[in-house]
Length: 496
Ligand code: AHR
Image 1 (tube, rainbow, N blue to C red):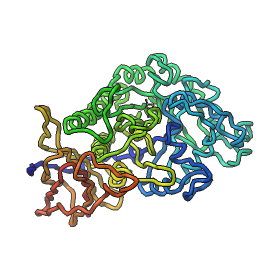
Image 2: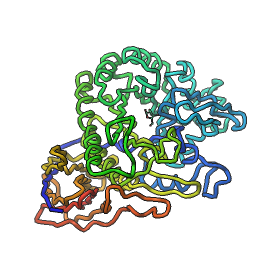
Image 3: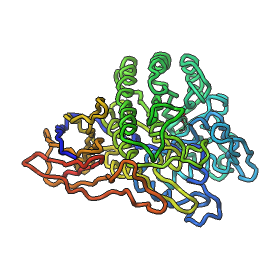
Image 4: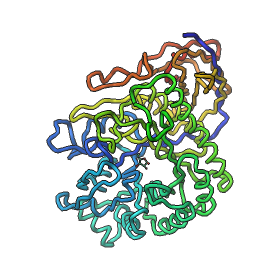
């Protein structure tokens, strides 16, 4: 174990804001994400509002989740909203064909989702059904949600117990239309987008922010065709989906808890690919939208491992390690540094599915290392972006190398500066000399997340194994700052 050095120069030469919506979440009808995660049996001995579990809600409120995407995912393109309204006992049942073939009883529908958003104090982001739903169905769902008129659809919402319009604004026009959402070509999808979007109407106080179903990973042609064929004024954003698969092989993705340094290295190479994807998709968007009016919405991201042994593989339940915290910290730094174009994102998926913030087991719940990253980084939400210049040593394995340190910085409305550092090197601490241009401060404090091993996790027996601690590796040297980052750590510094 050695100490290496890096340097960071931070300036306030930017007028950009890091949108809070970068810190968004995703909850699909998948495994125990909604059912068993947010929405539980009446008899479960936990604090509840109706069937919504409040321990989960309280934990998410603490990290200020800004939006929640629902009902999918692949599920969105087989979801028919009328099945999920009205008296619960009368709601039809369906089979969730994408995720484990389970019976969906539709007890969690539109009103329940919006009640959850209200409890979470978060903005709903609804993904509409393009794959198997009609233009009229999507159009009427929006009317049901947002209209205050005397139309039958608006009246139905009132009869179902919500007199006021919900004023939902974030609206996804399909999901993964290149795959589970209909296996379309980009040309066909772009035409469909225009058709569905034309009948997705604005209602008073609820101007829709329509989000096109965007590319899979590095499918640059999809972005090109959509940006060329859909006028900018018609779409608020275009989505991007990219998952970090540890081995890079979807057939054998790699374990969530058992991996060696070689696999960790490959995982981080795959995680850092997000930088390239954002750069290249943004460059295409710049051609058609030089004023950056259309947002890149990374509304599915995170690590996707093999399912936890003994669980239903269709439920995508995986543990969450210190490695995954480094993935979250790194990815959020990438988004912060690209806040000119990335204005919204959603981690897949909030509870019990893929890279979760929270895991539950009946009445027990735990906060994952990834949760703690969102807790540490919440200070960046809606803060002024501060550009950084970074010189970092490389972290090398088998002759290949990646940057060991990544970082991003912002200034909040109270004038406090926050810098989030990630040291990906699992073997060496790194001393970062930090300088400032046109930024004044007097005191520095910090918080950190680290652990002895990359494979360390929180369990229901030891839920606080990995937790945020105070950080004392800061030295002030004139108007410079030296931050000693422990190996495999995330550190957030606050300057006042
Ligand atoms: O998040 C799990 C699945 O991954 C989503 O349903 C789908 O959109 C993506 O392929």
